[in-house]
Image (tube, rainbow, N blue to C red; front, side):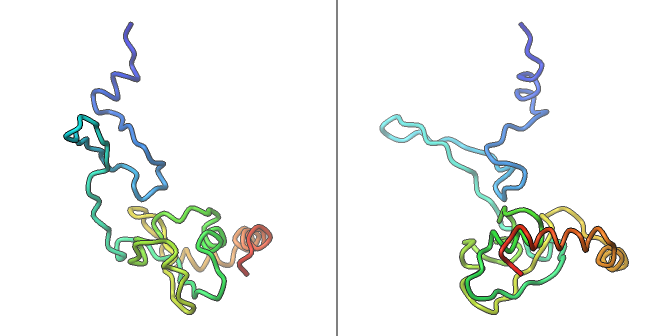
Length: 144
C-alpha cells in the first residue's frame, strides 16, 4: 500500500529532525560512523555558529545576582527555552550567560526572524496589550 507521508520523507520534501524548531540544533543533518567492532554511532554533523549580528535585537538585560537564564527568557519572551541565547551572546554554555553579575545579555528574536521597525517598537511598548503582557509575565516568573 502506498504511504504518501513516507514518500514525502524519502523524497526529501519533509525533513525528519530530532530537535524541535526552537532548538539551535534544529535542521542539522545526522551522519553515521561504523566503529571497528561493528557498532554504528549516529552523530550530528558540524554546526557553524551564527554571528550575533544576524539576530534581531529586542533589548538588553543586565544580569543580577541569583538570576537564571530560563527565568530571564520567560520574562522577556514568554518562553523558558534558552536556545539561541547562547548564539546571540557568543557563549558556548547556557550557564556562562548568568555567571558574571552585570553582564549585558542580548535579548533577541531567533535567527532568521526579522525585527520590527523602531516606530513599531514604540507603538507596541505603549499599547495596552503590551502593558498587560508585562504584568502577566511578572506574575509567572521570579524576575522583576
